[in-house]
Length: 491
Image (cartoon, rainbow, N blue to C red; front, top):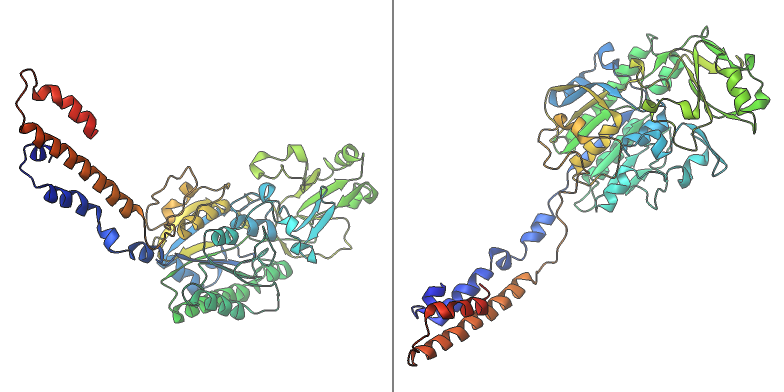
């Protein structure tokens, strides 16, 4: 093009058009292109927890609906949940990807010496935001990314956390039926565009309650487990009727398992230490002990070798692999019963035939995990995962950037039907394009710059034409003028 201009073989008007027209791209001619792209529907995800549903319950009785999800999706045989294996800590770990020592919900019953407050799942203390704000649950992250969330009774979802509730939520009420909770979830996912939720959570109290009362080995548990499968079938059918089953990624899991207890396996603390020396903070099988001021060493020495079926830890000696040490809500002394044993102050208290909360590596403490949907592979079985890996997996499915967490997408990427395109060692950034203005100034600026460049070329052209009309100087040559032209043209 430059040689054409210099030799005079191109019309200046032709060159002007050649320079300016390419600047008007298809993007400039179609200002709605970005708008259409940004309005692409977000991925959908529903997380369901059947409290206390142990990993092997699906093999105990016919469970056709669990089997259907496994055949159409994925199953994980061994899920290592977090320590301690209680309801509130594990449900918060699922939606934060954090161990209890980091997210702060370290037990169902807690004492915070910094706040000088006590927490119990049985009281209204659960609605105090201060207990929850050491972490950010997934529904808050979804909403900050511009999405919408809905929660049906998930622990903590009816609490104002970092200034937010879920977009849609049900205040906890155990008397609300599973079918009613499902209907709310369906309505939230089926709402008109711009109002429908992208991420939903659904919680049901069974089979945990029956497991406590009957014990997991009771034959009466067979009907309870079959009933859970029927409830899952109800959810599946409602999703199908609403046209959501092939659109929503469905994860069905639990917080923990359950083990059988015996009245013959009770550890009575009153036999070893006076109650006046300590405060009992959490319940069996992992008991937080708060010694009275100046009594730490005495209480520890009285308990450390008291019973061979109880392990006693000072806080700074709790094994690192439990990830249960670095939080003020973890008490100075921790008592851990061996599997099947119960710690009580004496036998006068209520006794359960089944319980959980034990070491999270025990098989009876492991929950079920199955999933299906457009994000998941079909008929795939994975050997193991950690419950904290669920959070980065859900963030990836929802196409949002995860907050710092203890999980790893690398550990669970094989569950996906596609290979993640982002680095597994760094947080995943949102793949949803940011909103842009309907019209962009970039093409206008580009056109202006092009016109300026063309005018510059025309000035040079005029100078060259003028020079051709003058006599050629004896010592002037093209080689001498070339550097000057390059500098002027910024070549």
